[in-house]
Image (cartoon, rainbow, N blue to C red; front, side, top):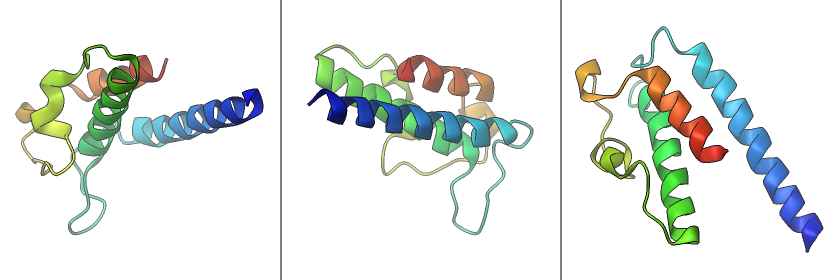
Length: 101
C-alpha cells in the first residue's frame, strides 16, 4: 500500500510542479486566451488551486481556505476578461503552492 501512496504522491507533486512552471511563464499575460473558447491562465490556475483546496477540505474535514474564490474558480464558472475581478496572479500562484504543500 505504501508504494501506491508514494506513487500517487509523486505523480501529484510532479504534475503540480509542471503545471506551475507553465503557469509562471504566463505571468505577463494571465488573461490571454490560448484559443477561441479556451480558459486563460488566471482561471486555470485559480480553478486548480480552489479545486485542490476543496478536495483537501473534504478529505480532512476542515474548511476550504479558498472558499471565497468559489464564484471565480468553481467548476462551471466562466472566465472573465476584467483583471479587477481576480486576485493578483502571483497570489493565485502562491495559493496553489500553499495548497499543494
